[in-house]
Amino acid sequence: MKKTSIWEIIAWIGLFILGIWIILKLSGIVQTPLLFEIAPEIALFLILGSLLADMKNLKFEVRKISSGLFRLSHDFSQLKGEHDVIKHKKH
Image 1: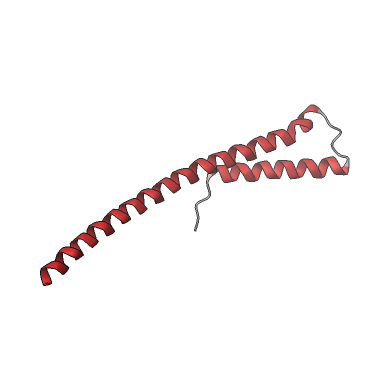
Image 2 (image 1 turned 135 degrees about the vertical axis):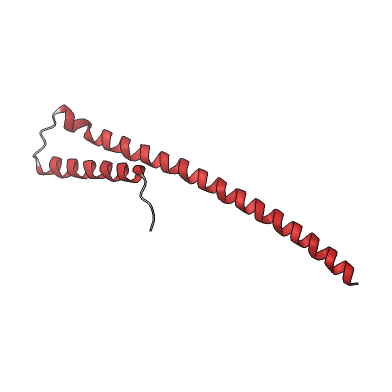
């Protein structure tokens, strides 16, 4: 099971705030005091911040994969060299 990061939780909180604000605004309950006027901006800020953090995590994971592939390529090169040596000894 995938571990949920704090940034995913923050993104969902941001989406929840934005959704509630839209519902309240469309239903006429919100009469636009300052706090409710800036709620969408706050929600979007939280969402964008969490996306940026996830991008940094993704970048780190891609580097790990790249490093592993480089190591694997190096190991295969060594294995090919050893195979060639064994092949030449037989002939």
